[in-house]
Amino acid sequence: MQGTIARLCVVVTAAILNHPLLFPHENTMLPEQDEELIARMREHEARLEMEQAKLEKELSQLGSKQEETSSEEGYSWYLWSTVSFIIFFTIEMYKVDLADAEIRPVEEEEVFSESGSISTRMMVLDKDILSNFCDKCTYTSAHENWRVREFVEGFADDLLESLRSVCNRDTDMEVGDFVGIGSMFESWKVCKPLTCDLIVPFSPPDPHFFQYYLWCNSSSDIPPDMQGCGKIKVTRSGENGEGCLCGSANLGEDMLCLLHGRNDTHTVSLSPDELLCSRDTNVLAKDQVMKWFQISVTKAWGRISHKYDFEVTFCNLDAAGALKIRFPSGKVIVMNIVPVVRLEDTDAYFVSHFPSDVDSFPDPYWPLSVAVYERNLLKHFSKRLPKHSCHLHCLQIVAFLHRKQSGLTGKSALTNYHLKTALLHLLLKKKPSAWSTESMQHRVQDLLGFVQRSLQEKRLNHVMIGNRKVPEEVQVPEMIRRAEPINLFRTLVLHRELYAATVKHFQEMLRNAPVLIQEYTPYISNGGLHHSLDERL
Image 1 (cartoon, helix red, strand yellow):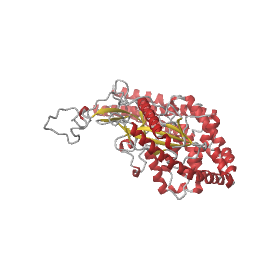
Image 2 (cartoon, rainbow, N blue to C red):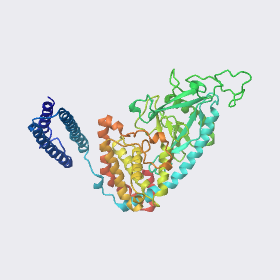
Image 3 (tube, helix red, strand yellow):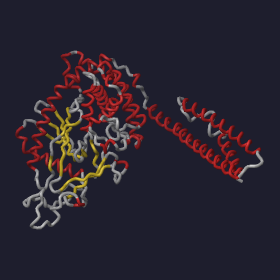
Image 4 (cartoon, rainbow, N blue to C red):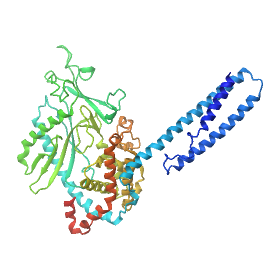
């Protein structure tokens, strides 16, 4: 009986292997360029045919024997069962690979063909023109950027000190010192208006503290589409067994708390609204925080406005600290002061918003920013790259092209943050010697090519989160290094129309790149006219 079943399995296997639909001779669904995949499939087919012939030969030899012991039949039964399982498993795996090869390239090819795909290697970027562009544009603006940073830092210190004076220390949030992030503080800002991004950490009044729930925690209830976010809970000391218990326990007259004196007013009870929480919860709400911060900044500016001769207005009512400073000369500086919550004792911060963000996260989810570590990573590379390296100039050139293309065709899902992320990936990948000034033309093409491949694959991983290639000297927290990588292009996967528009925007940028650079170069080739370039930027 067992021998009959074994023979039946072999016959069924042979029939499947010889079926014309499994390994067709002509597959019109496969892309023409997938010759390597077809060759591997043919080789696998030949191996399976040889295996089939060998099995049939062994079966005929076993069938010719008249007497077999029961132990031999049991062994043959297990042998044929194992071989059949391996063959069927192999068939199913190749069916999956074949389906992926048939579907994915076709979808991507449609989008890129519709946008008139152009290779970055087809771009003609003159080395001398790029060098001249950087010399007159980026080097000239470096001194001005330094003066702007110095002014912004002084003004921010004065404004935050005034803000602390208008806040109630017993009931209002405590505001810390600002931290400068973004292109201005990373020395690659090139286009106007001059914009400075500052993050300002705040903490709840005593005896309250923040508890953090990250998306990467094993017990997290944060939805999958909120990767990179966390929730912040405002907790009172003594609750859930944490913090000091003197505020909630009766210590008696003979007991004294070593942390708080008898006259400390740490037992003040605050409502969720006063703690900027969502209604009927103890979860910190972003809209409540932004409302409080905007009111506080307005009051703080009112106290010190008489000291300055410039005008300050809110340039975006949806962004709490987006300030536009206009001088009597007409010069404008944009200063984004963003309230944030520091993650424990790290340099990672939960941010309420960023004006340049394409994706917006609803309450109560706070996106986690590791911009300080990204700035430290750039400093790490600056110490190891050749003198006068071209890495920041490459980013400045691509950011310039992106801004000019946005002015022509409108905004897209592609942001300067994506461009910086691509540069950091290349810095981690390439040798330091590859970033010399002489290699600028090739590195610009590499950067554009990296972005193009990322768009084609709809995947651009966060450079810090889940990336173990980041040097230990940057001191990224281990919980962030161990997390699963986050795809910054996830929105493009979910929205096909947005993806097609972004691809079209990028292809137009590649097509217009040589023209845009040459158009602005004449204004900088003459040393006396470089200021007119600054005005046009």
